[in-house]
Amino acid sequence: MHGAEILLQPGVFPRLLQGLWVTVWIAGVSVGVSIPVGLLVG
Image (cartoon, helix red, strand yellow):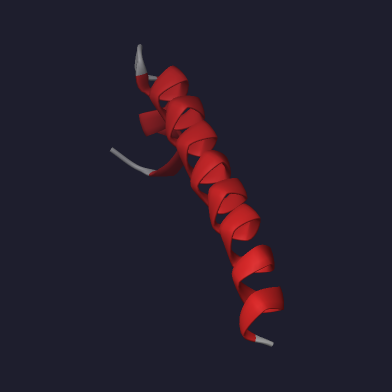
C-alpha cells in the first residue's frame, strides 16, 4: 500500500481528524499554561 491509498481505507480519515483535534487541544492547553507561568517567572 502506497501513500494516499491508505487514506481511502474506511475509518482512517475520521481517526486522523480525531488525532488532529487531540493535537490542537494539547497545544492550546500548553499555550494557556505557559503564558501565565512565563509571566510569573519572567
